[in-house]
Length: 535
Image 1 (cartoon, helix red, strand yellow):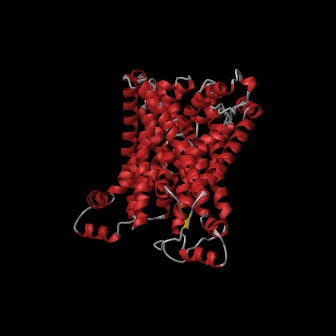
Image 2: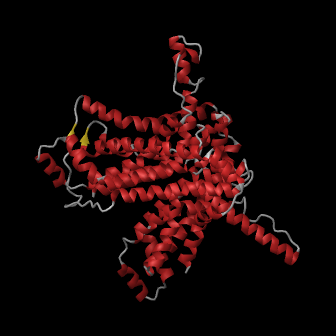
Image 3: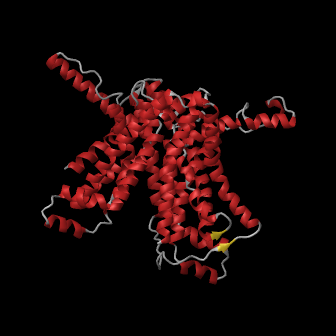
């Protein structure tokens, strides 16, 4: 019952948003349909298509090169290519806008070199555009595809590739006809994850002036004051996500992908020399350079050159806010995940499994949708409680939950509980059931068994879950923008606000803090993958 109650509570925002489609909004929805809805749909589709192509090209090519090719720096790139995953796309958008704008260093240098005096003398691509958003998102989301594709290439059977070579297939033909089709499920999953994060993005598209569903939801809620219409826009975005999941499943249909031997066999590698080696190094260097090194260098330089304006009292207060939210959310998420995962272990019924999967669905739901789905029931509860307290005791309770830290943490749990649950579940299933039987035979209750036997054995998974949720909360922007309490900003909100005002220097220290914190789980993940392959 406890597991089902948690699952129902966590899935409430998503169900609320879906139910709003049946609510009448008068002329507001007609106005949205006539003016902006088509633009939201087309921009979202173009954004998904561009990012899909970008992450597919970067992720698959780099995964193939570092896995099955040998060239200088290949071992370094194996983990370095994961590092851009630590950078939120909106931070790259702010950094590269500052670099490539008219008064930025790139265009200023070009005008100095060639004697140009105005934009009439030359053409320069506008980074604040749809293609700019595609590039920014591709640079930080390709690690999803890279990671899963690399694991798939590592797991491929040695005899399969040797058979391809024995039939006269060269490296390129073996890649396209054997390795790539076998890795298709993993690659499709990685692309799907990247596209879900694309639909969730708010900071990048808002800064670049690209009107998508996420910016539309925010504008409809705050500028127009229409919460039901905003919920219906959120429903459309949610249907986009569900359609994406179904499309990925349908694309595979009845296809099956089997390997005939274990992963412990060493794959034959291609040794690259000359211009091929140089090309491989360039392909692997560019994503890391553009996706992390340049933004970190830019923010570090701004922070160190303007310490009094960047690392001040306001910075430490914002850091404290972010740390409080991230720590509380991570702690609650890991406790709920342990309860749910252990509940399924004790009673692996269909209902229990369905409940846990339903609660884990929030990770596929954009933060703006969760924010809308959280605020509506919370506001209804506050109004209901206030009305009853007035009628019974003539006391006004006001807004107890709306605009509070509790509502914000709940939204974070809805969004990121799946992350901690996955880490806990993967660790728990490795523990043999005989340990449960031995503990129970010694008179231990299920709860004491979980705390005294399972928790110590799952320490690695628990730490991973806590770390991932902590970092995700630090980076989260859409839900925080909508739900945060008045005068309670976080590092992410502060960076967004000052970057929107073209005051990137003031935003540099918080941006650098977010980037450095995000590196922790990425580095840990890289080390874990390397160790698992070495065994």
